[in-house]
Image 1 (tube, rainbow, N blue to C red):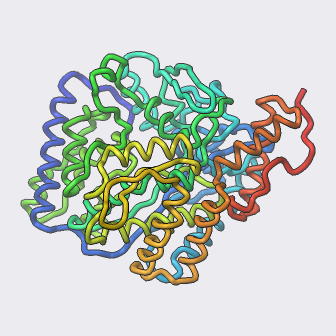
Image 2 (tube, one colour; image 1 turned 90 degrees about the horizontal axis):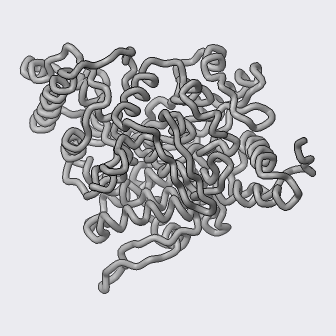
Image 3 (tube, rainbow, N blue to C red; image 1 turned 90 degrees about the vertical axis):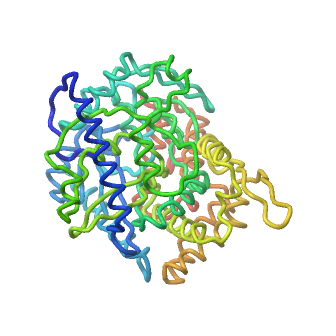
Length: 506
């Protein structure tokens, strides 16, 4: 989002002019859809993973600029916090041994980045929220030194008009305030992209929304923040509250937050882009010189820069993306619900589950979203974030009786969703060996009721039982997590607890 943003200020007329330009861009998108100008199916998927930098002590290291300089690869970029990096995997065609290929590429890239970070007494930790982050780490001074982050922070803070209030009640309760969006940097995710045609977009997006809760239930990996044990996947409430431009009065009125699940099933991609304009004022009213409608009239393909930038400041968990490749426009669904980690193998297993399941559900004759109320899908997402692998989810009953039943997430995944995901991967042409290996890991997590969040919390409590104080237990858990992450065996095989007797600090 906003790769070419430069710092500046906006006068009173900027947003008015920008709103008009956004409407022109939206009309341009509508015309491209009407004229069927979008790319034909290519079965392309892509992946981005946000990472943390931590030292041998398990504490965050504010070194991303120095580490990136040593990595010297365009595949790695800055992220919001100085302790964050992002790795981008080039688009791949779904099919064959693509899952193993992705795993090998990721391992190679992350091992290289880890070695380079080691030169600065730091290392890569792939985790939803680094357990050792403290409030003093998440301040505006530790935002990456990039103009677009500074400008985004300034505009969200100005729109909010007061400190951000964090109030998350889970196993324990966290309440605090922040004068910047820096707490958002704690959230490190895996983003899964799928290029789709306009005609298929609604089915894929609806399917992705329907299964978001199941993804989180089996993949949760962020149970700690600021020394408190919160939700099993604490990223969504943290992300919502740390980017919330609404003061309490607007929240009470029902004004929509910029981080949201959505409120309805859709019929086409235009629905989402139009909602983003209708509900959310511009944060970064930066104008391009392009006349989008003029470009279309001349037979060209518009960049729709204002629409793309605005779309990047509305944080849907399944986000619509407009892009251009080789001079041809395309659309993608960007799935943002998963935390990073625990291992490369686990990340690929999560991806296999998602891509297979979305393909199968999108092609069902009687789609799940015609039988599942949208409100139930949203409630499922909340339940999965709170309870992780122990969540109970609402899902349409099979058979003539119909209706909605509430079932344990592990039962739903093992009995119904994993077989669907296998069918979907077969439809993509993925090799059975890859299909069975990676979906088998999801099945084992369900059988053992283990994911990254359950391992973290169990190991943390073992450390407390051995006499460590809270801070030392979180640091020891983080160090052990890092060891097992780099060893690479999937999380369902990790032994709970610390490797060796720990000595309390001090």
